[in-house]
Image (cartoon, rainbow, N blue to C red; front, side, top):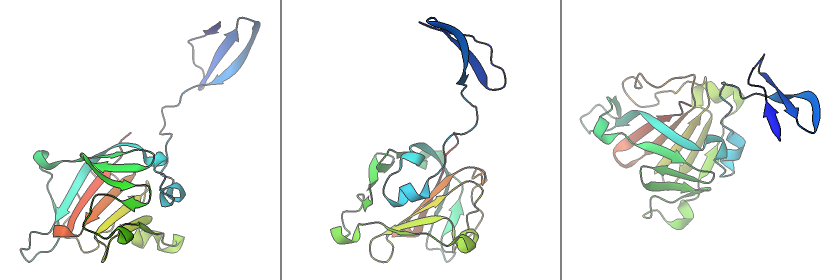
Length: 189
């Protein structure tokens, strides 16, 4: 039987084993974020480092009004969640990705649904982002993975990114070429 002393000093707790009365240190749970976006894993189709539910914080589209793609104010009726498991990505109820294969758009030939990953050099990371994955002819779908403290460039999108996008948090932007739609998600936890 194990008894735990409830006092916590400097992130350590003391634990006593009933078989051995000698106390030893046990690592306490930290309040700091323990996850970190692992870009190498993501390139292999393993999304465990970004698993969970992500909150939509931005949306842009092209209304074909001469302005091109523009960031819009989020409408509560159209907010989507992004759910990620170890090897799948869902937007709402729709499965987008399984491993390294695009699954949402069956109109794209099967051979063109394989995600192609692009990693900019460290020198170009600020200008181009951290990791991009594309699928389909002419980039029908694009997935952009932004670790903490890496800004998102407005490449061809007018207006400002929605105010709730926080550079100190991990973000994922999904681009769908139909109507030039951009969905921006952020992990708050």
